Image 1 (spheres, rainbow, N blue to C red):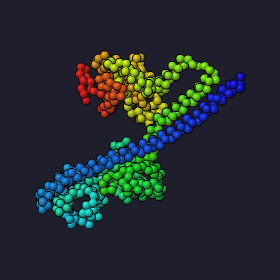
Image 2: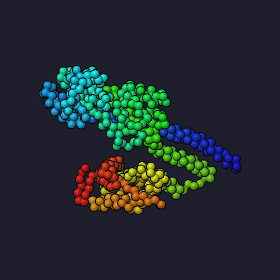
Image 3: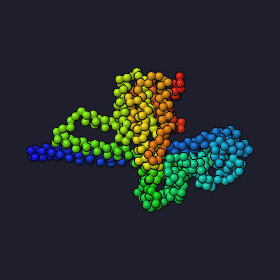
Image 4: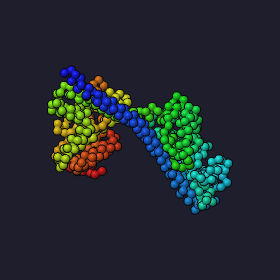
Length: 491
């Protein structure tokens, strides 16, 4: 009998062990790929952000150029002999373009600005670039400005109009970003010379006036990579060590003058963003590994003992699979399945979907810790279930996102009443056993089947309502279509 038991154990233990090793290996491989994907995702986000700043910078230069085109046409019509009228045109151009200086200059470099002042810029190195006419913009180091050049007449027969865009305007570009205080944004030429800085101007990488000066000694390979990207008008990110600062530099071509934009963020910031992306993957891998291990153990116990096959046990396992472990509510898959089942069986019964997103939840985690953030989610899961019917469907469908589906709402008055109930709930919602924290939420709402006859359409409608609530200042509820007692107004 002992030999039979031992044989039975070995029959399951060996293949189960092999399968467990294979599954663990697959999970580790998946986790490694997910980590790599998180890093690539952060890099793509930084590239997109840098390109956005580049588009904004070029848009400002283009706007200045449009003013210059109009002013140039006026000068071409009135001629360049009347200095008083020219000064008036230049002054108007400076005001319209919001620049500090506008110059008219002849081919010899004799220039006049909007105040009537005259100067000789013919010996300036940047004036030679103006005459060469290779690029629409020229950087004037002495002026700390990008000169937007417009020819007056064909082949500049009547001279040049030059509008000096001050790079101090570029310096304000990064002030309202979500990056940390060590971040910076610079415009550089092919040699890495810095033409303008926004953000942390005291950063080691930008102090010398050249992006490569303080990084090539410690980061030869990555500096070479960055230099090649500048030369080839390519985009990408590199990690560098500059003194005691570890940073990620992301470069994108501006598409003009062979200039590039370099966005620098601290390595700590980039790592925080990657960890945020990895979190769900780590949790999923851990949960999946735990479930698999438990499953194999259960299979072995079932084979050895030959029992625990009851319907109650099966129902219990199904309930666990449907439950979000933190809040006790339905998880995302269960919530979506139950709502779809109800829609399929009751296609004409008016119902309502809410999507709730806790305001500033990342700030709660950052300032009070993830454990307290979990307590906020847990408290919300417990308390929100008490204000709805047992037949309604409530679930947690994201990190700090919840979904409520109210079945069989008979009329518009009930719709508004239920919406008010949800808003009122968050006026008094508090979490925390020792430290009471008043958490608020942005809420989007949509009506079934009028605003979505299937789950995906209704979810998108409610999500647009959520976006509207956030756009209006958070801590409120917004319908996909604005509703008031007795009428509807389409957005």
